[in-house]
Image (cartoon, rainbow, N blue to C red; front, top):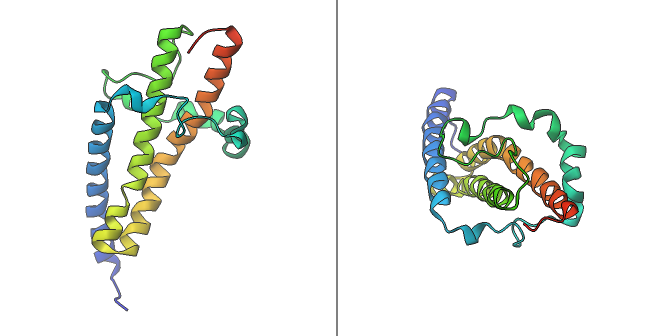
Length: 164
């Protein structure tokens, strides 16, 4: 069994965190370049599951309303990115774009989490577990927000009789 010193672990963790952030930026860029057809809110990946109960599962278990507006979003830093923090209007075209962008955000965050398998391949289980933990901590809250918001927005639009 190989014993690793604390300073060696921290040095590796710092390097891997940098690699992880670089991979995250690449995946974010790639997700913006994929065709919109990959981000349909009613496709298998993004559609609401019965257990989500219109997004209320996330409020019940994670109290999402208490913290979701406190987290940053990419549009806070890059003005050309579609902002999802606040819904500016409940019109068909805007809401369709909002829903598509929420799917894109969810896809991006899942991709970043799954990309940690690279660390398993190149340095084994310890690196993988460390980076997977980091990826989940940094990305899962944003997935929760998308999974919470999307069914609620769809429900509002259906109630208004607006096609999305």
